[in-house]
Amino acid sequence: MGASEEEKQGALTSETFNSILYTPMSMECPLCTMDEILVLADHNECVTCGHEWKPEAPPEDEAPEERIVKDAHGNVLENGDIVAMIKDLKLKGTSEVLKTGTKSKPIRLRDGDHEIDCKMNGLSIALKAMYVKKVMS
Ligand SMILES: [Zn+2]
Image (cartoon, rainbow, N blue to C red; front, side, top):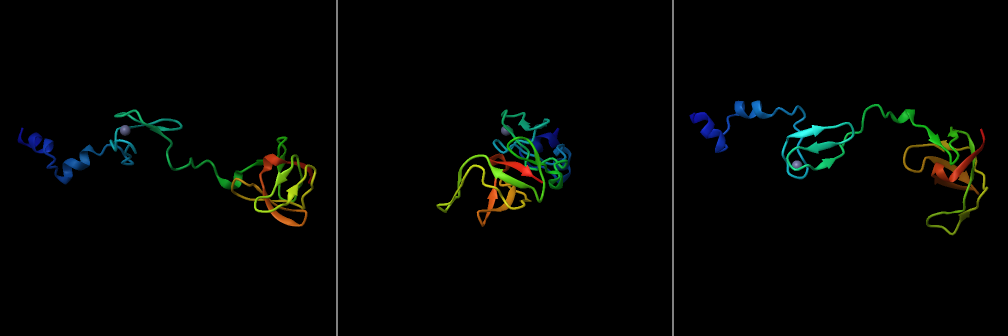
């Protein structure tokens, strides 16, 4: 009985401490820091306070090289494709406006939220695929 008294007072031996760390990843709630965590399909949930959050590490099956970039009409874009603007787009930090129908030089796909690197009107620009359509490949 004496041992359980010690535990209540926080005087834990290292052995006792290890035995209560049942969560393999020693995850804790970002809100209340308790470690009783439900790991669900797309988020974690704290048993203690009900807080829900997304796990920080992305699933490993999202390999970047498998990324598929599609234009505004759902056509898959590849390196070397020619695209055209489907709407007027003002270039940030310039007075240039890319008019609807402006065609690019062969594009290069890259990571990031602007998926397309290309030249238009002699300018090197980064475009979002949602603003263009493929005109030839
Ligand atoms: Zn919590």
